[in-house]
Image: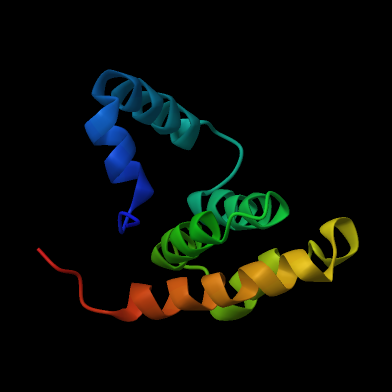
Length: 109
């Protein structure tokens, strides 16, 4: 049975390590040079390159939350075509679109 968010499992099983990881992520987010939208689009591209559809979905949602539109998010996925191949794009494009759909749904409390 897969946890809806695998990071929740990581938090439960390794709370101290997860907290330190989250601190690292916060420091990375605060670095100057790139705006948050660009950082999320890069994350979508990196997650695609590493063939991680769940990561693509999560970062697509985050990219949309920072102002990225569908074309920008799809573009971040498909830019991998010549680098990692068609299979990678075909594995990750549905996840990016699912992330966009999920980002449009009302947030639960």
